[in-house]
Image 1 (cartoon, protein in one colour):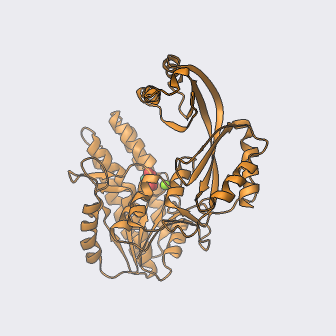
Image 2 (tube, rainbow, N blue to C red):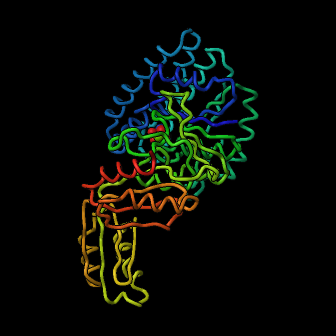
Image 3 (tube, rainbow, N blue to C red):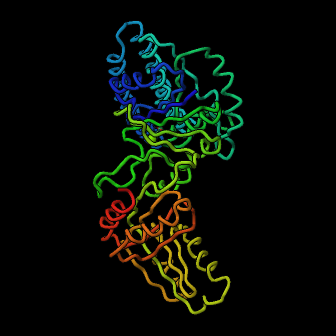
Length: 437
Ligand code: ASP
Ligand code: MG
């Protein structure tokens, strides 16, 4: 069985819900994970914030406005009075829960209950839509099987054990619908997998039921091999390794968080990124299948600061790097790229909050040089299988560009190049021309 996941925009209106229905009713049984309708979770956060601040009336006004929106959705979504009534009952129940949380003092437990209502509504509404249209569909209550442990980490053994009886109880169906994001914690209270957590639900569930594939449906055609804002004719990447997807994640290919794909990676379940607006496009497949190797993509990240520390004391000395790293640790600043020579070390950070203090302490160790407005350009792909061709091509592609740093070998799936941001467009274009055309 496959697991499909649709985000808030995909279920953001009756019309979009019907598009989702079309996609999921292709004759193959599947489990479908849904987010709340777009904007809903943000509104639930706002309601909770008002309640924390003691503004009960303000909270009730926001709840009432949100309810109006859902009343409208129910009115437009269903054809028959019977299903309109079912939809209304769900909306009344869920908003009853929201109003109940406004009574008495507000606390974290009530907040989590509030945040769960969006997914509880969207999944019920879509299940009814399927049923009204004549499909056999059942709702799998995520709160009965999604679990996090006392450290708030996904509790895979528990999820695996709990989901089985839930699926069995649902009987044979065309489609099983379930809520993304929400779960129970070690105290059995309602909790969640953090904002944007529906993708995580999909991969956890996929691993728990040993799904044949997890499909994450969004509004773009998977991952592109270059940034379309700077390069013409970018192409969708057909296949990526999990390791390559993780490298790209840092560069704003935020489509999938590395943590999100971890359960799928470990259980060896391919994850496909698909476009709701263009369902026939195969999208990008992320898997452990190493047979499709080679260069996959280039990505860039701006706002990088390069720091060079030069010290005669570094030559033949040990313990120097530790002293440098301790300073960054002290100021909770993570280092991204790093290269060293015998007497100098260059590294990059993307968070300048404590830069002055960091420079102050580094100056005790040696001469410090700072370059702001730098960009990391990262070429992703399996470098080893094509090493010979690859290195030559990358260096040729960089012709005429003053490279500030280059880092290769940290992972076999990436080469990172640091340049002044003014050369970003040129670099992306040259690499694209040389490596991908
Ligand atoms: N509805 C939740 C959120 O907005 C979870 C998700 O959409 O993934 O964060
Ligand atoms: Mg999302």
